Image (cartoon, rainbow, N blue to C red; front, side, top):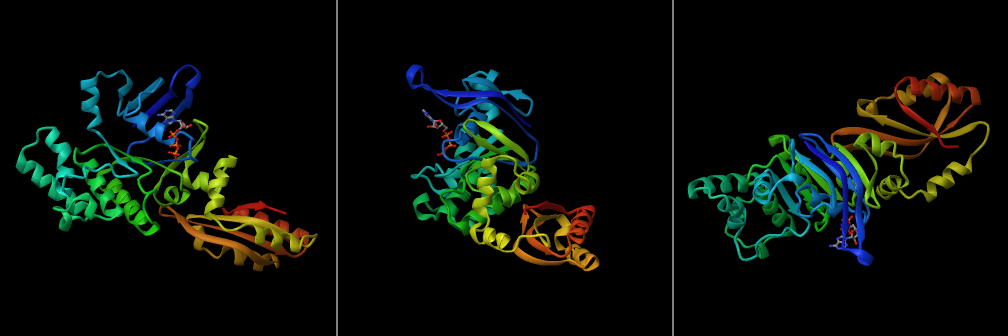
Length: 338
Ligand SMILES: Nc1ncnc2c1ncn2[C@@H]1O[C@H](COP(=O)(O)OP(=O)(O)OP(=O)(O)O)[C@@H](O)[C@H]1O
């Protein structure tokens, strides 16, 4: 659906030149929610703004739905941009226009008739749950409501792609979740491809199918969220995940408190239905090994359940080995920590 090939963006010239992206490649599939996560200055905004050419790439190609945007003239680009909606961190609403008029704005630009506009705007207001607020001005709305207007406006031209530029960064956690649920809903309902950038792993974990980690203007890791989240390869990715999980100090102490021949600390990862199975206790009972849970998380990645337990096995070395082998044979991922 979206192909980014060799994307380089250099701001400024000569001594002042700053390379924001260098030779970046990315492939985003139709109908998926694709997240790009990175620290401040990594190049996220530049990347998302290059997708609809709000920012002109210095080099490289941007393809959306089989059309190379970077080759189009101004008129052709305007036409293609209708298929790409965008929402922003600070909403970018017209402050002097009502909610209704903000949503109607893109439709008026394309010369839709008044009854068509009315029908469409009312549909969109219902979709984002703002029917009661249609005559209000942005200043009379909460942050979450403003972003709902942003979403409705972005959907007015029936786009195939929705770009979200840190769309929840200005919102509190509860409002963030309600906007994420709205994005998930419109992704499912309209089979809309969504690309979002964020610096919060929680956003990726809640709604994305795949993720790319951006650092220093390039992608350092990408894949299915389940894969990247549970088996991060790059230090930057591990950093993001660590910031979402518990404090590691007490865990280290618990692991080190009892090290020796008759004990082994392991991290066990459960994915999907296995998360809720009793495999661990069954295997431990069979092998006669005891276990203490040192740390544990059970949660979901989008709608896939997962669990991660750090446990200390206690028992004869051979029995611990058999326990690990049996858990692995039963489809769990077991990593020996110490
Ligand atoms: N208009 C500009 N002129 C010069 N340099 C810029 C411009 N916009 C961005 N940059 C630089 O490009 C790099 C990438 O910036 P970008 O805004 O894309 O990162 P980001 O990951 O979105 O960061 P943040 O989360 O802080 O918004 C940074 O070093 C930034 O200083």
